[in-house]
Amino acid sequence: MEGWHWYRPGISREEKVLVFKLDLSILLFGCLSTFTKTLDNQALTNAYVTGMQEDIGLTGNDLNYLTAVYYSSYLSFMIPASFMLTRLPISRILPTMEILWGISTFGCAWVHNLKQLYVCRFFLGATETVAFTGVIYVIGSWYKRDELGTRMALFQISAPLGGMISGYLQTAAYSHLNGRHGIEGWRWLFIICFCITFPCALIGYACFPNQPNNTRPSWWLKKSEIELANRRLEEEGIMKIEKKINWRALTRVLKGWPWYCFVFAWCLYDQNQFWGTTPFSLYLKASDRHYSVSQINNYPTVGKAIAIILTVTGSYYADKTGDRFGPTVLGAILVASGSIILVVWNVSEGAQFYAFYIDGAETAMSTFLMSWASDVVKHDSEARSIITASMNCIGQVFLAWVPIFTFDVTKAPRFTVGFIFSMVTGILHVVLACFIQVLDVRRKRKEKRRALLIDAGHGNDADVIDLDNQESSSSMREKH
Image (tube, rainbow, N blue to C red; front, side, top):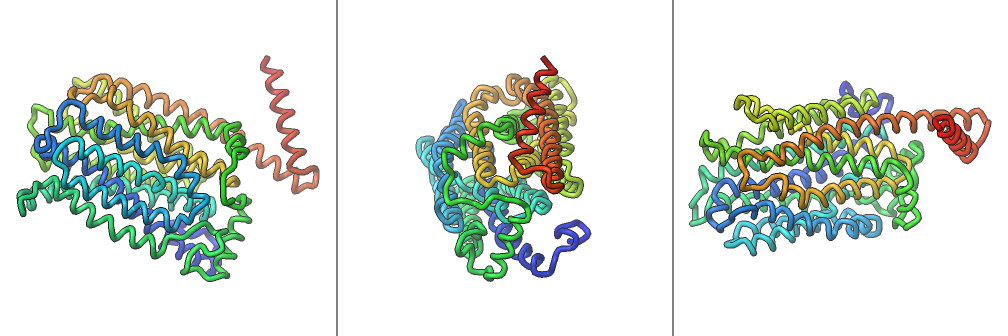
């Protein structure tokens, strides 16, 4: 691990033990939680193309409506749940929601009509509200800046890994369990997902910690380790995590550029990563090349593998160099190239497969964007909580309904409107990444100048901020 800079160079033995414990607890449950969420979510698409559509009579755009119900429920509870993270023990909230999620997934195995499936999807959305944001919040609360990217990468690759395993599980369930005890193969997939999810919740109860400034963040941390954890945060200049987020903090965050830029970037990410998932499966099922059930479930997993590779390599590069712009813009360019190929459409089968597969690069963008946003507002825990929650929530507001119009299920295998839309959002993502980089470079320059002036005894923070404001005003006058 040392060669890969898993631990910072020169780290003390005591701090290394602390970080090792954090990795075993936070990353273990965080990765398992994300893995099960993606596994169970992807199961809906895998089940749809493997018999569920015919068995319970799904027609037209029902698959997209099921997705809309899920996200509508998710979004309805998202903001209140995110504020709840700062008031109640995260170590109990997340595992409890994990159990409820597993029960809702289990219910999907026994549905016999669309209405019943709508109910299950509603509860799935409600129980996932705090999972992603909660884990991201805890990771950002315990780790130092140069430890963040690699851990975020490991956490994020559990999502595409869950998508991959779902495809293989459905293939195995269809091949070996279809009809066993009178239960269809697609129903067995949901049963298996439940059996995987429930033990993960128990692991969360046992080891997932609260914030470091909590009076008792976890039973497995010594008092000296808790003190060390808080000193680490103080060394980073991170604000002490408060019990609640007030409206003044929200107003402060909304006055800065990070909220607008990263929320918009996440909205583009949510749209761009979609067409490599369900639309690809529908493309395979509706194709006149007549792909088998195993091929329909297994081929989309290649994009997940690409996502894992790019997430690990991109995050390692970003951590080692401090450059979060490079991996972000590269991923955006690759995804834009894939969408352009699908707009052209009349290309070889290999080119179309490349276009769908390369959308896996967009999945890696979640790691790059979350790490970048967390890095920009590292010193402000309230801003970090609000921005990451807003990114996840607002991005999925659009994901809840836009695909209904852009990727109409009845248009498979050629989603002309969706492919054109994805091309536009892909190009916008490239442009936005460049714009964020310009603003981030300016931010770092001001922070460096502020630190130098304060160290030299030429002023305090307020004086330097005034100097920055004067320089900004002068710059605006010069432009006019």
